[in-house]
Figure (tube, one colour):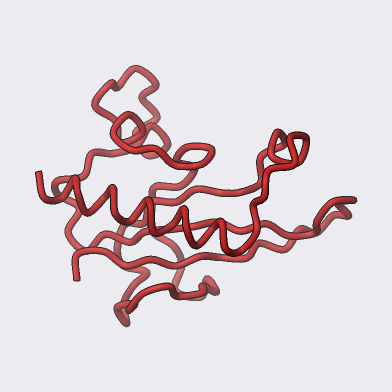
Length: 127
């Protein structure tokens, strides 16, 4: 296993007339030595070698770090017991233009995008 995938359901603490939660998708990387940092992780907006320029995902990369072991997740693949010790790349489905443009960002869309992200990262590992 080189990667693993999971999603999170984030419940909002405020009233949203459209939806009171959104989904985020993540791919954990067992050996991230071949995967460049994202702009999110490096804080370098000028880095043309950043992961952001090597993959396509809904709304772009919004997470590049490790999660806490207490973070509730919904596994999509086999998850290592110590999953929280690995770097995770993620995206979210909470963009204002999604609501305005009536983009379907439901559970199934999140699962599909997460597997799309997983495939792209695995392809980068092979290079």
